[in-house]
Length: 219
Image 1 (cartoon, rainbow, N blue to C red):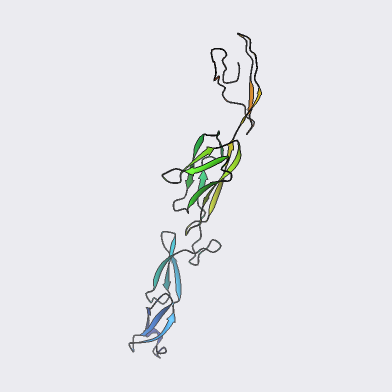
Image 2 (spheres, rainbow, N blue to C red):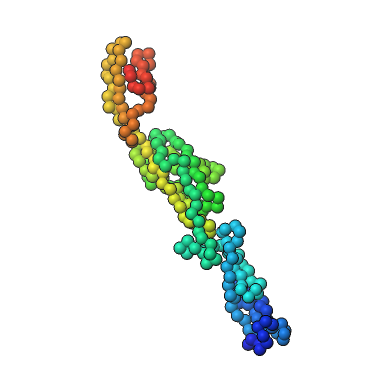
């Protein structure tokens, strides 16, 4: 191409060629002169996930791309947001072979959400079939472990995670009377090894006609 002509800059316009360059065109001599690099501008879009790259010289170049965050900020000025990621419970008690479902609340448009147990021999976690708002926690054996719920970084939000502590408790029998005289009563005692709570309910599973027990362990 020719060098820039000697006509005033006011007589030039600019016509995009590709992602890098535009053609400088003189309106007075109606010829294309030299090519030059775009002078980029960056404008965020309304959806919060992308920006439009344009050219300051209005050559017609436009390209919509996702934000590229460095230290939480994009070249267009957009700032990466901190998403909502919360659980209805941060501590869950569940017996071996039993399950409890808790609710996970999160921002619309958040990154990919996953859940992982630090020890699947003690407890596992799985999401429901219809989204990531319900998390099913299943006890496997006695012990304590953490479930980590994570959301990956994306074009709008920073990465985030929460920790749910899962306790699969056992019960320690402190005392159970071996002999109770007819018409008399004695008290049994047991403690939950997970948190030291007393047992909430007692049941007779062999012959309730011989002896009965109330919820407080009185035989």
